[in-house]
Length: 79
Length: 221
Image (cartoon, rainbow over all chains, first blue to last red; front, top):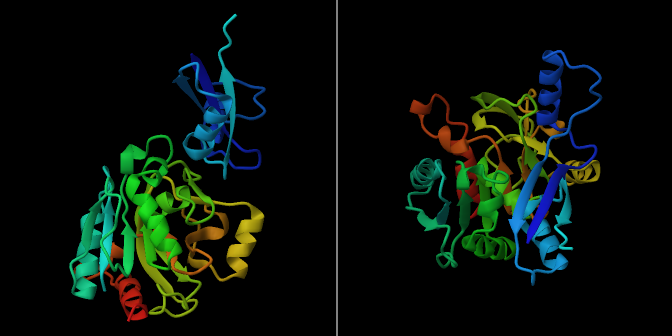
């Protein structure tokens, strides 16, 4: 089962990569960009038996550094 | 002084560090592979070297912080053994929770590789006793992720408790309050981005790094 983990920098943490992307987009002539924040998406293929708590523990222990990052878990739901 | 250098896949300052330790202490350090689960008996100093452990995958130091040997390093640090993390070693110690905060991508996004002036903020620690308080020294930096970040409360605590060991004399990488190296609360763990092991002998152009190792040797008796 596919699970996606989105890792993003916390609000208030300066994002140098987001800033560089912002400048590059404006350099290309795009306007109206208020802000850019860069993060990462990690896709996990998990057995049905893996619990939400397990995924949360994976995020806290390794996938995100909670000093500077937030994470959001998105589990694929089977109809 | 009995010391060890932890070696991860992608470490590249491990041998420089071993030469510095041998040169200053007269004893050969143990090179400990990251897959080991135990450290040699009776260590006075554990060093975590610079480099690009695990290719900096996920985050600099994140994989190495979860290596089998790091459990033993954490236990030894809690028991009072001195631990020195340099560059990637500093990143690994923050990821492992032995030091607060995190090291983010440099503010200008560029890899910084040059000699920089540092101010010694704390000359009373078991690592820095050979420097004078407020003394300016030179050390090389070579990193992409040296931008030290922590919340205001943590930064205030570090400053208040004298745990900022070194500060960049001028901005280098966007580090909060120009922090270049910090101590843990007990003072037996130091993490720093600059490379003291690269300024050991006259041929290096400067020997300011040597005094760090001499200070450790002296403190350990």
